[in-house]
Amino acid sequence: MEVRLAEYAGFCFGVKRAIDTVYEQIGKGKTIYTYGPIVHNEEVIRELEQKGVRVIEGEKALFSVPGGGTVIIRAHGVPRGIQECMEKSGLECIDATCPFVKRIHRIVEKAGREGRHVVIAGNPGHPEVEGIRGWCEGPVTVIGTEEEALNFVPEEGCGVCLVSQTTFNYNKFQSIVEIFSKRGYNDNVVNTICNATAERQQSAQTLAAEADVMIVIGGKHSSNSRKLYEICQGECAQTYFIQTLDDLHLELPKSVRLVGITAGASTPNNLIEEVQNYVRINF
Ligand code: F3S
Image (cartoon, rainbow, N blue to C red; front, side, top):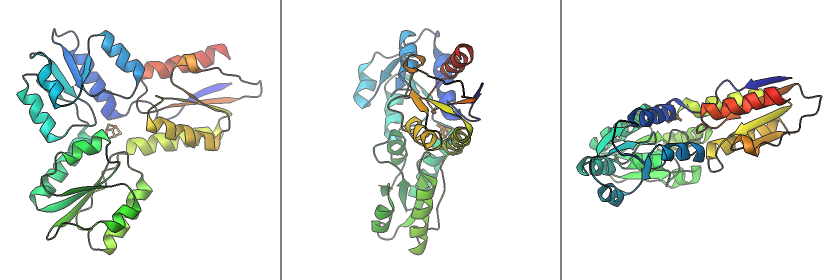
């Protein structure tokens, strides 16, 4: 029996970079805070907590913790106002915003200065989208559906700049672009969807189509992990969704030849390896 890991699985570049940034700061004698959980994975957060890393969120929290600590901005980024508060709060601020997200901040900042109405194709309320919104200087609208795109009217006298949340669905973005093109709102459209999501989904689907059994490792609340699970289940009826090895109650009939493994963007490598080794050794 073969155990195979999807070509792209686990932490994306931006999340890995942010977590590495936190680990680099541990042991330097300062209290470390992350602004919001660094990743949607309870295991990782627990491990960091044991090493003294605290999660804080909200303007008030920044001013209520003792000065002299370090606050780290996670890959999703934060609004400009929050970053300014961090700088005023007496904490050392380390920016681990994913460079792909930072690029969007720069685009919308510039568009705002040029007098454009910024439109973010994304999920309102998602921290990344709130962060992007916070770098806009002028009017800004978040749209999540084609219907909202049809109803959108830019502020009078403004050009339009359309960007997307990095994890936005590509087909949906294309439909919004088409709607905007028909209305002439398309002179500043930047597709800022990150490849990491599509790569994970495509490689999970390819592997699931071949596998007899699939295991998807991911956080209960991680939407990209859930999506991977749905995709795999569509291709492979025996798909397991687990958060840790303890959740895995695997039954493998003798006829199973290939067990595929994939993991959401917030799943650490050691957990992926643990599951891989377990299946290899026990079956
Ligand atoms: Fe960055 Fe893409 Fe990950 S934008 S945080 S590398 S999903």
